[in-house]
Length: 91
Image 1 (cartoon, helix red, strand yellow):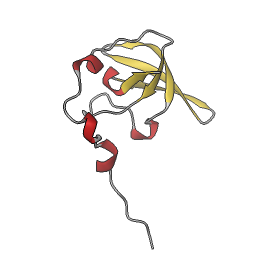
Image 2 (cartoon, helix red, strand yellow; image 1 turned 60 degrees about the vertical axis):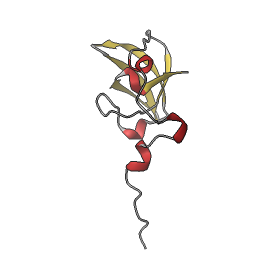
Image 3 (cartoon, helix red, strand yellow; image 1 turned 90 degrees about the vertical axis):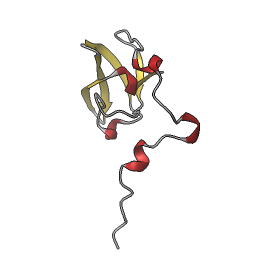
C-alpha cells in the first residue's frame, strides 16, 4: 500500500505557544552581509523560500529591495535564495 500524504497543513501550523500574529520585530529585522542565518518559515507566503530549504543554514550575501539574498549549501552545490526577513533567524 502507498502511504497517505499528510499534506502541507501540518508543515505551516505553529505550535500552541507561538500562535498569533507574526511580530513586527521579525518583519523589520536587519541583517548585514556575512551574517549566518537559519531559514525558519513563518505564516505569510510572500517572499518565502521553498519548504525544502526549511531549517537550512546559510549566509547573507546582500540586500535586494526589502528582501535578502542568501547562499546555502545543498549537497555539494551552492544555491542562492531570495527571502523576506520574516522567514529568517540569526544563528
